[in-house]
Length: 116
Image (cartoon, rainbow, N blue to C red; front, side, top):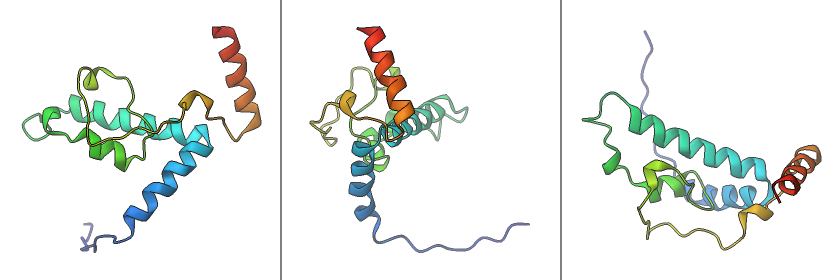
């Protein structure tokens, strides 16, 4: 009961990725949400019941990470032992990215002090 409509491909998508990366560098919340979304996508892909279509070994992790505007690859079992020459992580220490929300940043700093 839902009519389908053909959509034209977006032409200015490449302009959006640098903006997303700069947003992730400016706000830790954006950085963490991108990482969570990437991890969720890969895990859902890997655990899907129809593994004839959704084969994890055929997934292009580097392009997917660029699409999620990741600054670095997350540590997860699906990526263990793989290298990604097409993906270039940023040279910025991601631990230094702070939250724009001051309360969340205080909590993060407090947690970092406890871990030290």
